[in-house]
Amino acid sequence: EVQLVESGGGLLQPGRSLRLSCAASGFTFDRNAMHWVRQVPGKGLEWVSSINWNSGNLEYADSVKGRFTISRDNAKNSLYLQMNSLRVEDTALYYCVKDASYAFDVWGQGTMVTVSS
Amino acid sequence: QSALTQPASVSGSPGQSITISCTGTSSDIGGYNYVSWYQQHPGTPTKFLIYEVSKRPSGVSNRFSGSKSGNTASLTISGLQAEDEADYYCASYTSRNTRIFGGGTKLTVL
Image (tube, rainbow over all chains, first blue to last red; front, side):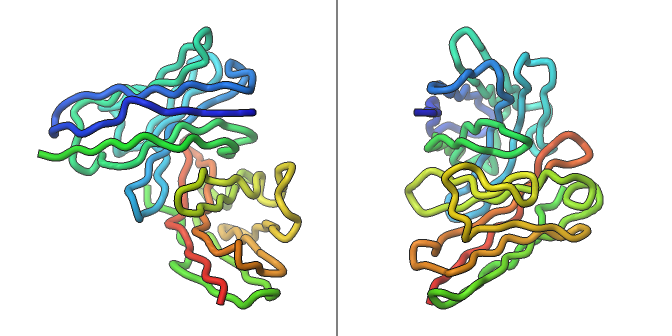
């Protein structure tokens, strides 16, 4: 079974840093691009970042560019999101998502990040 | 970049067909055949419904179909069922090699 399990979310103050992790299983991880997508509870989906199979192509939404860094460890079947200089508006449920044909075919359950003073 | 434009809500009766539109620009929907659609039920993982405008992943009911004309994509659900009541999102690849979602549409089955 293809599975994505996020971890690392929490409650923290503005300006702090946090690293999210995603453990992948059930598919050949190093053959797929991966994404982070976030969603404020009760609101819509927002694409955050993507990384191709060999980390050679990284992309970011304008809202996080310069503050967030996506990375992966294919040996560990893991995806990461380093979030620095966090803002209140970064509060959301963060999903780890597998790419397939320029779409998002498998989603994790998400990890909640709350930024509040 | 602003979200793709979807109607906030649509509704239909069981057995009917509904269509959800998703409008973008020539830099996203209009420029590429990489439109996809997703279904969200509260508390369950997001479900992948359509990719590359009109292709259905294995296991997705053929009641779900997708199309595109110019800068607007559409998701049609035929033979509406109570279990189809959910939030639906479109997404597209963009000219900046990024992705963009629609604002979401709440489907109510009357």
